[in-house]
Image (cartoon, rainbow, N blue to C red; front, side, top):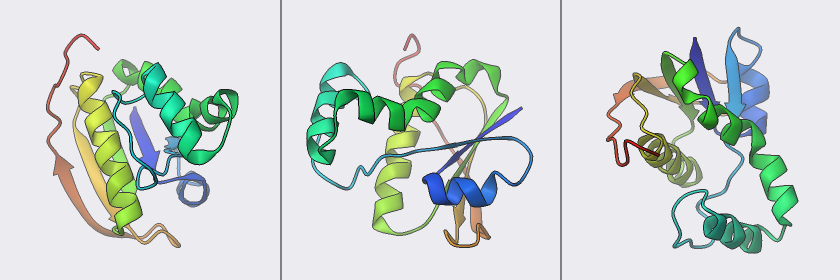
Length: 135
C-alpha cells in the first residue's frame, strides 16, 4: 500500500479522489523559525506560537500526517505531492527530513504538481537518509 502525502487540504481534496491513502501536510514551514527537532514538544510549542494556535488546535490540524508517520512501517512506498513554489519547497523538505528521522526504508517518489489541478509536472525518486534508525 502507498502512503500519499499532499501539500495541504486543497490538494488533498483533488488527489484523494483517486484510490489510496492521502494525508495532507498542514504546516507552513516557510513561516517563522524553529530550532527544535521536528515534531518534538519544543517544536510544537514554537509552531503554535508562529501560527497563533493552541497546542490542541495544532495537533488536530497535524493529526492525519502524524498518525500516518506513526504507521509508516505499514506502507510499501511513499509518494509526495507538492507544488514547486517556495512554500511547498520548505514543506516538502521538512517532510523528507522527517521521513529520515522516522527511519523510512521504503521507496519515496516526489511528484511536483500543479496545485490547482493535481497534474504531475515532473516526478523524481527521493533518497531518504536514515538520520536516526531508532526514531
